[in-house]
Image (tube, rainbow, N blue to C red; front, side):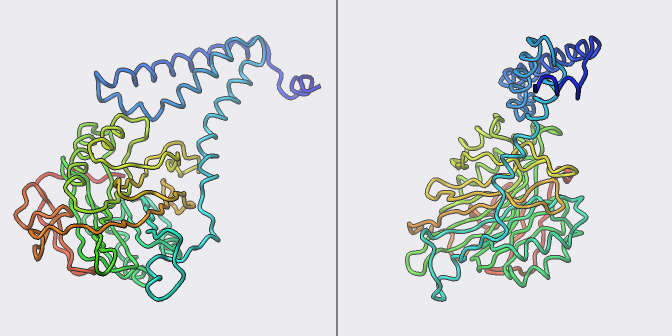
Length: 392
């Protein structure tokens, strides 16, 4: 019965079957080339840019092989299979969308006598706001209505600076290099931080905004939150790898617990992902959340946005946010708070630091701006020697 209905809806003739055969062979050969490229990335590192396509290539190759074994309905099967391959990552992402009606008591309100979470936690919202985002009012509404404790924003350039004043109603503590398009990083917080700053991008470091929080009153634990945007490998794979290596080195030098969130322009299939997690000692949850591309069609295929944490804390939950006019979906992350006190290095006491790892004013190879303690005071950039062009 179903076969008769399909024959009436779609009538394939010899020419259609012939075209289906050509399409199947094309998909099979193309997928094979992608997979071979991924296998050769150890010899030719530039081929690592193909790694995100690995799961798609495997599924497409299997679909093409099955289509070639069919005597009939070859084009119908192949087109349907390829459509399913494209839709699957987006369906997984939809299942992970944050419920608009879900609210929790922010951990920073517990000091006022409110109910405490079962596990003390920090909610971090990270968004690549996109330089080409034309819905800035919608972006501001989304961030204002969020119940996040800390928000890190990338591609938040000079045209978005007017939004910061309005966002102070909910997030009075801010660190920003939005005035410099090559940096375009912002960190917003509901709770005061001890110190904060930003690092301008160089060939060996991505743009970074960071803030250091002290958890507890007597036995203090140090927690540093960093926001970043790593250069895309499709333009300059050497810059991409060098910036990840520089970020990993900075994380290793940072005292206390660390959370690094942002757009890393890599997927779990990328060799650079494994290299970064090994070099930094950070971990990311195993849950796959495709966050890009969300524009012009909301059909995300790849996860480029992550939140990595040091091994003394853990990610309790992670969700995607709704569309906000960007080509990336927001990433929500609930992180457990550190339970052990951090041993403060006496050498750091009373020293103005240009980066979260400390080192004082004379630290080498640092291009940074320092923000006054506990707020969003004046910022003055140090001159950068070499800066990658801003990403779009």
